[in-house]
Length: 210
Image (cartoon, rainbow, N blue to C red; front, side):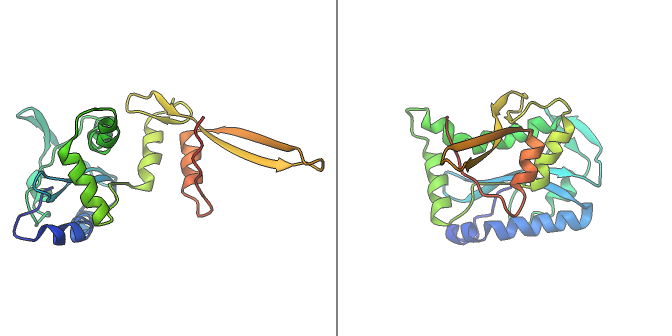
């Protein structure tokens, strides 16, 4: 989704989350439960736009193939709820394709670090999100659980959209015996087990690189 240019750039960056939440609320009131993956990005002129994947839990849509993309019959109805600019919506042939669509924008930072070329648009996006204290992307908690349920033979750890393992999640504990010797134990976690721990109120995260 994009924004019209009848509002100041700084105002739109301040309010981008508010407008997005209004749109999501309107969708949920009409279609029920929805899980979301979204990211902000800047146009070359600095104005924000939004990339989002929506997973509808309570409704199904009829799809048709048109002009190289899968579309849904309710396209105009859903796009009409976005009242602040242009929007385009299409159906996904797989959940992995949808995740990959958003990851393409989220992972631009990593790709830029590996390149000698400076991506001006990326730098501008990061600068504006830093100035206005915006989180680059967001994922609904239940989205992770759905990804696990959809794939029965998912390997331990985080995987990419092709199912290849990226990281292994391990629960580790330490203790000292009466002689002062440090001991430790570790247990491999499935992605679903890790997600449940990660979602608990007691969870704290320390990143350790090996």
